[in-house]
Amino acid sequence: MSEKNSTKASSISIRQNRLLLSNSVKDRIFLITILAPAFILLCFTIFIPIMKSVYMSFFDITLTNIKSAAWNNFANYRDVFSTGDFGTALKNTVFYASSVVIIQFILSMALAMILNMNIPGRKLLRTLVLIPWIVPTIVVALLWMWIFQPQYGVMNHILMGTGIINEPKTWLSDLKLAMPSVMIAALWRQLPFMTIMLLSGMQSIPEDMYEAAVIDGANKKQMFFHITLPFLANVIKTVTLVAVIENFKMFPLFWIMTGGGPVMATTTLAILSYQTAFTSLNLGKGAAIGVLWLLILILFSWGYNKLFSLRED
Image 1 (cartoon, rainbow, N blue to C red):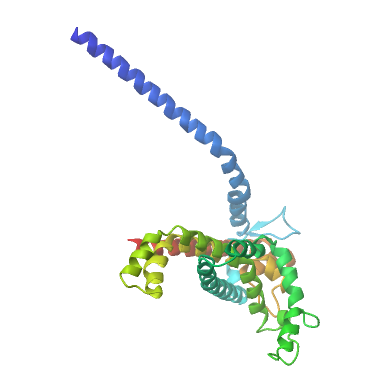
Image 2: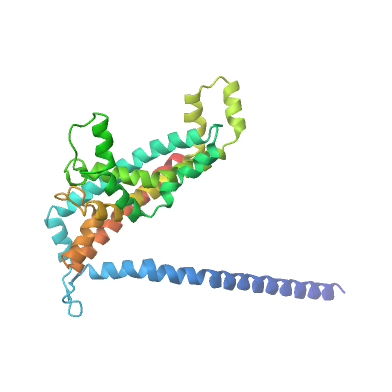
């Protein structure tokens, strides 16, 4: 009798294991079915173009010899580093991206704290803050080109009217003013995103933390550095990394507003890669610049995430 019960129990166990295995296989098939279209889309829009660029970077290829391109090993990379253009573009890119992200973070944090306060009309203000973010980048570039126009631009009109400057400034064609002008346009365009993300993070902080801090005699500065910033650590990590990547690959603002000039004052890696590939028609060298550009971003992202993981440990 015990043997029959044992046999019956083992058969039930086998059926249950088969059922669990069958359900697991079904779940995997379902997941693959759901993820396959997105993965295929990523392959055609990201992975395949990246591999194509890496492949092209090792060829002497132009628009006139695409079908007869010759393998030239690392000649394109040597050509990139043999001139000072890449170094200038990299310096401009790092300066632009770091400056915009730092200023953007400070302003966004201040604006988010204001919008998080119980002030009249804060719902309306939160809506208005989003307006620059929903405007297309091309429209933003054209708008700020008009603002910085030397003869009839709003910027010169305001500054001259208030006596800050005595004569019109050629903002976008001045060696010293071109980069700050593009940075102002970028800040106006990108500020709402970081502000809203930081504001969302602030609203998730428990009020009990602040109430307890007030009871313990903490002032606003101490609450900011010991409660607000620690709770916003993950949000800050995400938004700053996104901002760095977005500004590191910024192309529309520079191309429309300055075209990389004057005299390479606003030539970034994005502009240099485009000019090399489609103006100078050297697709191989342009691809090499793009590959180096991608490697720099990957290394920065890895180091940035590593830095935050060390802080968390």
